[in-house]
Image (tube, rainbow, N blue to C red):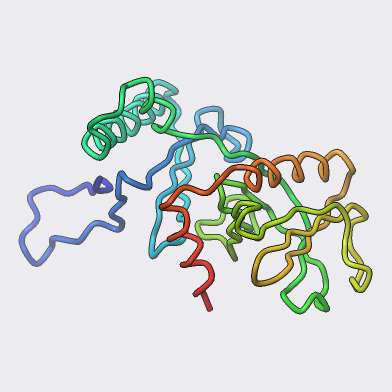
Length: 221
């Protein structure tokens, strides 16, 4: 899919390349009226250099946004029919678009676990846990891959005893084969919901293609 560009009979010197090319393979669309602050808000995401890129759009006419949402799903359906020729429509429909498993604020610290905790907006999209300074940021400040327990991933309530710095009272530790990630929640209910979302990913066996995604995260600087 190519992002639309408005022009009127440009000469070759006036022609411009599209600002973005979004591959249908990784495209997702979800309604986000509360986050965007508009009743007809839509969040579109795609992968750019294997990092998630967010685009937030809205229209005063709700039907216009619904039509775009349906058009994106239709394009995804055609792609999936070609990519998985033996799959039934019932198998493909759940893959057309997906809602995020969980979104909200948590605090996080750095890899040395001696830095201060900073408040960030987190989005759990399948096995990608992304964190942003602001919910409407185009790119995440960082991403954490959450694999399965068979691959050495564990979710724990609380922090290691050596944790330093001021933070919200309800901690979560995600243990990966390479390091531990520490997050702090403001309330116990937030902690419970985030742990449930993480545990759902950890309890699910990884698909073959997800091992390639995991390998990319391990080689990130």
